[in-house]
Amino acid sequence: MSQGISLAARAAPSVRGLHALLVDAIKRAQQYHSDQELRKALKSQGGIAKLERAVTNDRGDTLQVIPMSLNTLKTYADTHLPGGFKTLNDLRLKALEALEIAAKRGERSNKRTRSGLSLKVAELEHELELHRQTNMLLLKAIAECHEWFYNIRDASSALQREKDAQDAADTVRAVLSMAMPPFNTLHTVEVPSPSAEVPNIADYRND
Image (cartoon, one colour):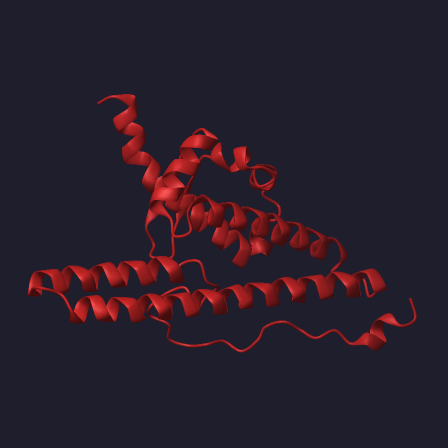
């Protein structure tokens, strides 16, 4: 098997694994902020292209992220990810921001200071932005479903109808995979209550 064929077979799951890693890093920044290799890679597009590690996605599948050139990453991301490389790069920037906030939070978590309050505000603004993005993704998923309903209704045969239904499910799963949990799957069972604590301003007034 030639190197080109080998790369083609490995690149698609690799970009999906990289996507899953970035999404997970945003959602669980506290668990990733001490990963110096990842934080360094997130600082540039070329950095994430050179990452190499095994990643488990939300379905429990293990995907092998392999190093490749930036141009190759862009090509396969545009082909195999919703939103293409632009979405992947947006996730890179958000993951970097999330890890930096998590690292600062760890350094100042026990300090009731004005700077600590400013950090808390930054964390809450970051979480709010993630929820806004999730709302947009949910709207996109609904719009995709709306379009597919007509395709399925107007299908020329039962076989085509079955194919359109599977394509619709795959498209919606791909869109939802970029949302925050528990909204990143078609099998949501419970919506958690907000987890963020609201700081007491009085704790900071004397600093």
